[in-house]
Length: 146
Image (cartoon, rainbow, N blue to C red; front, side):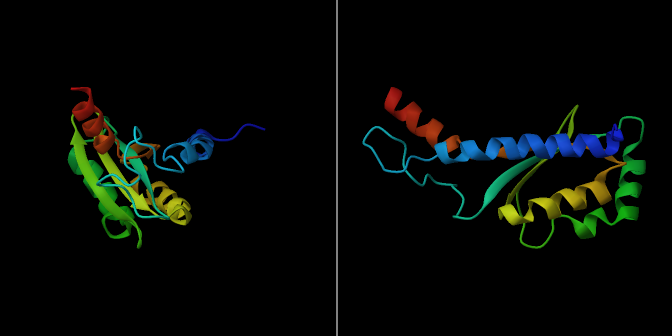
């Protein structure tokens, strides 16, 4: 039996996110080495939190006023982000829509997904990506390279 697209797409997105989680153990080394990046670079998350980037792609068939009216009607501005979820960054990316970076405990992932599904859909299409802060590693590599 095939699933409706509205249900299948978030399940595929969630499946992709969950498929990436086993690789998270490789992000930080278990023990520090002289040539390894620092164990806790500036901007690193406290234990028990993950970062999640959400693309909120504008529905180009709707005007900004129509999108905002939909978000107000569904309670988006009151529901997002759920309690215990921190907004790390929120950017407008011209030609795409909005990009929201969250810090959250892993157990809040489902709640974030439900809020997006119940309040943002209709104004936005969405994509979810597990994220980590690479800037400190890049800066260190740049300093040591030269």
